[in-house]
Length: 117
Length: 113
Image (cartoon, rainbow over the protein chains, first blue to last red):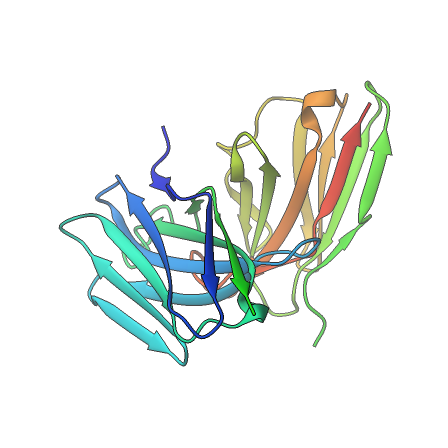
């Protein structure tokens, strides 16, 4: 049972354009969401996060949108750069504020983003 | 500051052998996580510790897997005996606040032949 799903295995965009990566979840207990970026032969690195009390969080070129009713979040990268080419993982956590299941992240399968010059 | 350190980076072993993976978390982090990444199952949490105490080991696949954290700066993941289906990349991560902003090590690529 995959609780966090990234249905697009890959995405290709032109440099300067917007990249939109999508993520769906099924567990209504999830209240904290994160995006990680992973380059080959390296560990995932934290990119941006959002709490369920918000619907948008922005950090430079990266914006995460959360639609709780649809159980959907997306990561927007504007403008996309060739250095953004990597695998992007969506992750979710439940009970972060209540202290239960604290620390447990559930990851999606990842989306390979390729940004062409 | 040094990040999360894992050793070895690559391990090739024969089926039936014992494998020990090592992790040094970031100093001051009180949560430590072990993950496994495979093509079939993606990135899955195996076990995590808080202040050196195992909190949730429900992701450990079977009794052949064990993890310890004898002190705040060191953890091991042991597989005994190893099997070809254990071949994967194993990541260690640490954080100060569980569930958010985990910092990952470079991973250990394990191949069991």
